[in-house]
Length: 547
Image (cartoon, rainbow, N blue to C red; front, side):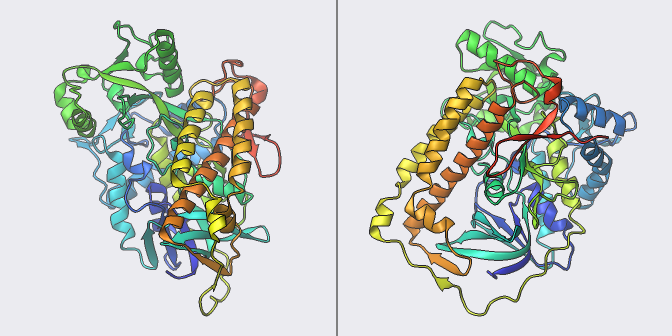
């Protein structure tokens, strides 16, 4: 693999794939995936893609719904860009062979929570998978692109206040790649929580790398907890799309009472409200789950529109057409991320971010359902005029070999079992103190604990050697050390993200959108500002963009 690229794109979900398609055709582009097998979060997306396509709908309505869901923290200009450019993105997807569901009248649409019109396009209940399939087919045809899987990025390369590349682990070789620009499309950090609908690799490493390199991050306290994840012992928390509630499915407790009856909108109230109502009902009753009844949707429509959900439930021994299924809230989507402008540029020159890793201003404090896949597409298009920094001449020969670690240094680094246990403990801590409901004193205590753990963890000799590797050197590692290094770095990045999350959640002493403090349960007008964090300084606030 070459050492110099015009652009390196980190992440091969919808955001990364669309970025590769939109970047100028003359650029040499490297697309990296840290995993070679598990699917991206984009592939797991069931619900759909929001866009105004019907004559009874309007841009004004989609904008109003997005702003209302965002609870005062959406940047109106970013929302306007999303909504107005969405129909063109739909047309592009149709041209690429995206297999949307259709009716005799045209594209089929469904209703999801907090939308005032049926504007959510779908491909049965595997819209994300169909989208990624369509984009991957086209990406393979792009000239000048190389895609490499199973190559994780560990840190960004910064010179004189500019991102000029990144460090990767290629096989057992730790090395540096120079780039005229780096685009993070690495997804969110839902796997930081013990209960999540996200795949394992959604650990927030892009946010952690960007912050560590000096980029500004924004609104990390705002996490969306999806109310209806399948909740079975020892089984993944598979998402049950709220589109099933849009078609008639209903929530209830063991006594047959609705836990959301008091909410405006009931089963289709905004996700944060439904999740809190379920969490409180579960706490009051001392249970680990409630129930979702899919039978009102009707067997024929379930078979036609939600085959993936039915198949997954049946694989786990459930019969959703005959009986209700157990559900509970789980971490689903991160509204915050790396602060970007309308051209997807971060505060660090040469670094861009697209998709869930970015904070574009579209989602505010609470994402409107099905706006996220469209955000990937719209803001990837903003990179079609990207001009990367000119590259210096590629050096001849190979980089110098860094000295190997001594046996004593290796023994001083924690083993794999210890690291796996530490990651599990951190996930449980994040769920307990920064989950659906939060309290200031718990956040502050946990923040001290996480900071102390990160400080000790970063003294691990193997991790220090990797993070301190000079750009003109590469480090050859035995396979066992490579595996251990990846776990060391995974835990470090999770600790960074947990620290930023808890710091932001403790800083915002109010409740708004996906951030709910039981000790400050109402929104406050003076907190209608973004939370900003930069390395080396305390959290501060910035204004919400004006229309």
